[in-house]
Length: 411
Image (tube, rainbow, N blue to C red):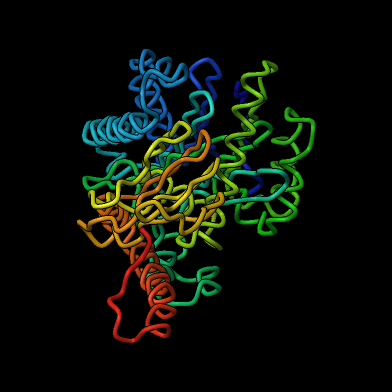
């Protein structure tokens, strides 16, 4: 798939200087927005320096991007590249800040999207945002790094209290600070997806997700940034406004079209996965990024009875049969999973699972679950609660049938 970005920045109606910067490099697959802060034009300098440094880091790894696109490198390697790009951007801004006394503590937000084939990776610091529009539905992939948003995530205040909160614009993360922990999210792209990277000069007014999704789904990609900037100015234009829209165009080859259909099937299966059902797209993508995608040929053993249970395996495509000895005890359809006990740690499989046709699975291991919980503690707690509920549901029917029988789960 080929991505194309179109952007527009405007000073707004109440500011004299535009401290927003944006970057769109279709050949590199890099798209970014930075919103500067610091006064004395320091914010503008910081935003520009961050984009230049990030682009330099990613441009130096063109070989990796090419290998991810042709399938000879894992897309997970892009996460490390994006983290390094933000780290280098932070170092560049810190160096400039130290050399300019009048621009002490200058900094910026930085939200970037790196596209390599059907893979996208977000890197994010601050309160600029990245949205994904898929089939007209809007998904916010970035989290605002403001004190008010952090308080809401911790349950100290209600989500609706973030708007208008005294600390609603107090950044907890920004490029140009000594301690930086960017959000990095890897996700898969579908043909005709649209992404929006924007500064808070737009999101302060574009609060209706249905309206924004409808605008991003319009056919005229080149006209969307103009429409969004015009809307924000008409609504008040209280800050600099930047809108960068990225469109993902499908490739005409039959092979690519088939790959896109397989991707849609996998994403549909994830939505039914007991750990992911009802979660936001961003949270689902985060779970998927900690899973291992595996392909199994017909009659291949996916889980060996008596062998190690590596983790919870979700069927994304195809058909799996669960057997004990020579007896079939069930089949899995896409969206169903087996081996949930494996998320608790090392276990022995009490059944075997075999592919009845060429199938693809996503496996979340115990270590993957721990890494996910470390990265997002709140999400980790939610997943553990869902896991406990799932195991209890599997346990109850067995106890009702024979209260003295040992609890067993398949596999």
